[in-house]
Amino acid sequence: MAVTFLMGFSCGLPLLLTISVLQAWMKEEGVDLSVIGLMSLVGIPYTVKFLWAPLLDRITPPFLGRRRGWLFLAQLSLMAAIAGLGLSNPKSHPFLLAGAAFLVTFFSASQDIVVDAYRRETLSDAELGLGSSLYVNGYRVGMLLASGGGLILADHLPFSMVYLIMAACMIPGMATTFYSKEPDQPFGVPGTLAEAVLEPLREYFTRNGAWWILAFILCYKIGDSMASAMATPFYLDIGFSKTEIGAVVKLFGFWATIAGSLAGGIWMIRIGIRSSLWIFGILQAVSTAGFMVLTYTGPSVAALSAVIAFENFTSGMGTSAFTAFMASMTHKRFTATQYALLSSLMGVPRVLVSAPTGFLAKSMGWNWFFAGCVLAAIPGLLILLRFSGWSAADVQEEGLLTGP
Image (cartoon, rainbow, N blue to C red; front, top):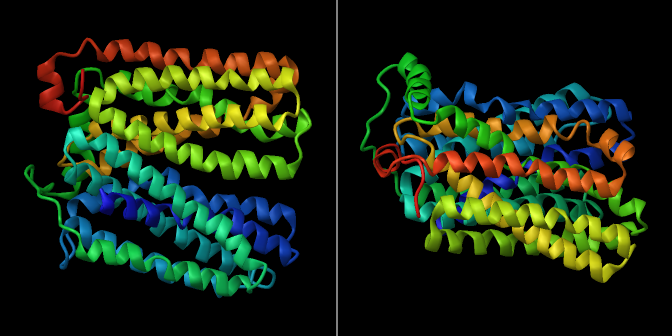
């Protein structure tokens, strides 16, 4: 579990170094806003990481084993890429900066692929819930260090030095990789690259309920994603100051999410993944309705704190269950490829569904908009009914779901 948490930290650290921290650096250097906006394209590797995941399933490096070998290489390359990004010049050489940022996201996405596979292969089905919650918590701590810590440091140090410090923060993850245990391979390794590419798809789509699983992944977090996309404009619209939003929503909300993730992991040990998805999904929908309460209370810090505590706590629980669910869907022979595919699919609703939320909020008003977000959570919960029809033999043979 400690290894899972530390690997999560290493995965969360690089993410915002190419988003919020890089945007602040470019803005400070006077880079045009259109160029800053285009820099978001360097994040493409996160959405297409399934394309090279089969290589990581098929090929075993000559040292440390299949999982730890690739992980150590990805982390070493990532540390060098972060340092290289810090040595770039946003104003005079924006294309070199973009290239360095792209390398950071590529090696970061590669690290994600291997860590997801490692977690699935080293934890039993009963341990996946708590392991996933600790991974998510480690991920968020890494993001907090990179974004909050990085921006604070940038007030006192040049951005180039900040990136060198963040590159050095990859060392704990590399030490974790070096001293951890290589997972067993009871199902073997794909014999050819073609097998590594095609067999994971064949194995998955010949399962009972394969398409329902994909539909569930697309629908489960839709309501939560829609509400989150418009949350900050909503807070400002009803009268909260940016300081209040930063203190309550970002700082206090961060710890509420951490607590929810940990509580969700512990509960999954007791009640299993399927029951957790039901309970946490319902609580997520109810917590979204809390935003409607704020339209009546106005800019009350006490009300905002209560809503954020409940919403972030339940969101953390739901994310832990969702992450554990996706891990349980993968076959241990093709863990890297199948998990990369499912996790890439998970990001589709966050991108596509968020696009029209501004239009919907403007035309419907805040109350009806958040009511719609609550209703949007229902299809994902209804799809869970399909899971209860699977037999115990299916669950045991294919590793579909654990618990009652």
